[in-house]
Image 1: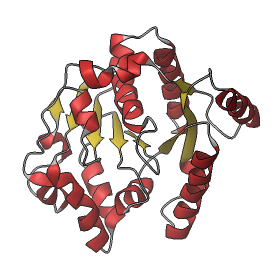
Image 2: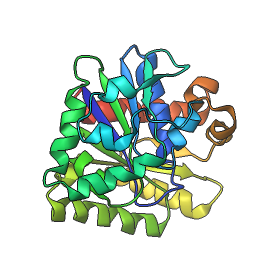
Image 3: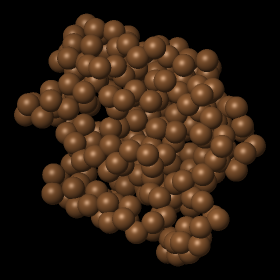
Length: 249
């Protein structure tokens, strides 16, 4: 099973839309896919038209209750795609991991319970440098980080690399940064995009500002399903192929 995590230092950078669309693409290829919504805001849950209700709550799930990830997951309108929804209790996961001596071990145990029933696990992490992100970094095959082509987000990406080193959660090589919310009408975006793609330090996909992606909050359907031939849809497919290659699939 491949584990693809999506995170970022702050919200509003295309993190959740990336997680939802990549999970939908994995499922469309026939992979048994689970999307775990770890963000208490529950945007991934909402975008797939599911009610924000985690059966038994986060405490029971993380502490090793009877229900594993597959048991609390729910079917979506996308064939082969299930979601572990987020609700108000999801914010407790940070506290539970923080108080644990072995936070990565807790997450690894939950993920291991899926290995016979899923081919791909996509994690929509909460924004910020949290115990959840630290634990996930220790089990993920790749940690995708959307970066808007502006100066401040690049400073944040450097902090992400330092965080992985300081916590010893994982090697910075696990990071898969990519450009997100690119608006080519802006000279700065065009210039930074050209510089970054020429440097080879980022993945090659560049997700544009897109009405197809913006409509996900209204239509509650992944953009790669509702608008598969849009520019965003094509770039998400490119990103998914790159993520799989980096994850060793």
